[in-house]
Structures are given as C-alpha cells and as structure tokens.
Image (tube, rainbow, N blue to C red; front, side):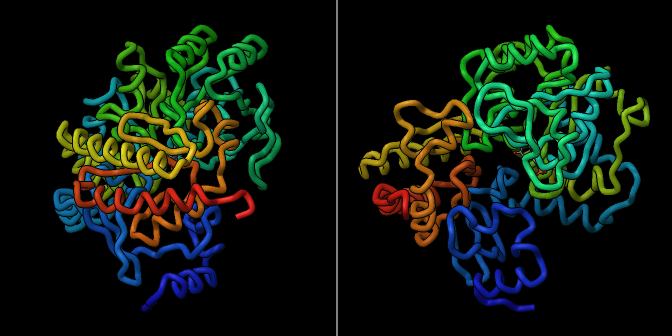
Length: 438
Ligand SMILES: *Cc1c(COP(=O)(O)O)cnc(C)c1O
C-alpha cells in the first residue's frame, strides 16, 4: 500500500479504523486540520508520509528519552528480534529490567505488563486484594489509562461520587471511585473522615501531567502518604508518564525522594519500554507477593515481559545516565525560556507549570496559575489550535492538545531547539490574535 499525502492516509484509515485512529488524541480533534501520518523518525525529528520533517515535542508521549532510533536501542532490539519475537516463557531480560528499575527507586518486586492501563488496573486490584476494601480515590484531571474504574470523572466541586466518564462504564464501576480535586487537602480529609475504613487506595500521578502539568503544592504528596497510611489505605503512585523522565528517579525524585518517603504501589510505562509496549507495577515484597502465583490476586499476560520490549527498555534505561538527563533538562530549559520570551513579546498572558524535564503552557492563567483541573479547564483553550497549527506549518510537532506536557529528548540539540525557537514568535502572535469564536 502506498499513500502519498496525510489527507489520503487519513481518509483510507477512516474506512477501516474508527475515526482513523487507534488513540483518540491522534485525530487532531481539538486542534483541527489533518492528522500527520508519520513514516519515520530519527533523533529529535519525525518525517511524515509526505516527506515533511518536524521537530518532535511529543516523543511518543514520553518513551523516546534518548531520541528516536537511538543506535544503542536499535541494535539491542535487532539482536533480540534475531533471537525470537516471543516465547511465552520467562526470559532473563525481565530480571535485568526489573533490576534496573529497582536500582533507581526503592522497590523490591516488579511485575511487567504491556501497557500503563494494565499497570494501573492491576494496581487497583492488588490494593483491593491487600486491604479487603473496595473504594478508590482518584483526582480530577489525573489520567491513569482507560480501565473502567479510572475513567470515572466528576465535574469540579468538592468530593463527588463519580459519574461514569465514558459510555460503556457502568454506574457500579464508577460508584467505587471517588473523585477529589487535586491539591485540595480539606476535600480529601473529608472523604477519609466519612469513608476512611472503606478506602483501599488513593491513586495519584507523581506529578499530574495529563491536564497539562500541575505542580503538587509544597508537601501535598507527603500529605497523601500520611493520610493513606493513617487510614490503612495504600498509596498508588502512577509514574507511567513521569517515571525515569521527569528526573532520573521520576516524579518521586521531586517529592518522595528528597522528603524521605515511599508510596506502596508504583506504576511504570512509557520510558521503561523505550518505545515498545512494556509497563509494570512494583512495590515491596510483602505487597507484590499478593499477586499470583504466590498470592490470591490474579493477573496475567500473553505478551507480558516480551523479550523485544525488554531489550528496548534495558537499552533505554541502561543508557539514560546523568549526561542524558542533563541534556534533556538543558533542552527543556532552553525551550521553556524561548516560550516565555516569545509569549511575552506577543503580549500573550500565560503560565508555565514544570515537573523536572517536563513542562506545559496554559493561556490566560498568569494570575492564578494552574493548581487543579478546574484551573486547567478554565484557561483560554481557544488559543491553542492556532498556536499548534502555526508551529506545525513551521515544522514543529507539538502535542495535539493543550492538556499535555511537552516532551524533549537527549537528541534535542541546539539545532533542533533553535528550529523551535525560530517558529515560536509567529505562533505566539497567532495565539494572541485568537478569539473565542475562532
Ligand atoms: C499514558 C499514561 C497511562 C496509560 O498508559 P498506556 O500505556 O497508554 O495504557 C497511565 N497513567 C499515566 C499517568 C499516563 O500518562
């Protein structure tokens, strides 16, 4: 099959795939225009089916920490492919990747799955199995994959019993999830005061990055640790996005590590697969041994710990040394500073939220900043589409939604960042000129 334009590729896809995409954000629904069909990638750049090149600020939503097609990762994957794609047995790579993870964060046991969704879904089951309780608390605006109980979302407001966040999710599933505003200690305190002995776990992103980046207030994560422990509930720490990307020790490196505490169940994905499908849940021996075959909490996966995925993860994590994180941080800082000066020059009101190497922009929020989902939703969303389209036309591929972090890699050198900086002024002017009607 040969397709020569993005439009033709998208039209063909829509004939056989719902909406033409396998993950909704790829459809460009909130930014308009034609989704780009990528043909190849190298370093900091993506190339689409028309041969157009873009500086990539998505990095496959996080995994490509070293840059696309890093030779060390490609070589490791080729070698793994030569040995066989899948055996349906254990392979030594699983032990090696588990050890790499445990060398960075204080976990004793790691169970590999294929997607972040599976990791968080299993973490909930494990927390319920360990505690014998049913209720889960999540925060509005945090994304933990698309399993039923975690899609439940509620409007803003204090603690609300969740309504199903999607057709096809039963009220029964949604009713076991309590949604609380992020950064609101009093709301969570009230939920625990009322239902504390029925709460199996609080699940949180180490740093929320799926409503744009939202920084936890000083001491907020430590508060989550303390209140869950006091009530006999577990703290599920979702590092699927931030893990080994925000810092060398993930989002934990920004709060738990300097403050000296650890969560109960960790979830990883994205970077640990290096671009292949791999994710994991992890924790202490005591908690993790509740999983089958040792314990009564069942979980399994035909392709879990796949040897090719393990090879990509080992090569990526193994090569992500201090110099890699320094390079990613440098690129992120240069980009963020360029955004600020371009936005200021265009008179564009904004705020920037940061989490280590990750950041995101929000329009019209300079006064309040963004501290929860209501703040994120209350921003001037209409400015993003013209900003995004201007950047795209100038060869920069941003996340096709304002509610996402911007991702860079160690391959984003001065030349790549320079191309983005050159594109920013015109895009900032387009955003400044935007009106709510479009
Ligand atoms: C991406 C993401 C997930 C889901 O991972 P998938 O591999 O897409 O299923 C879960 N939690 C967070 C915080 C994520 O960013």
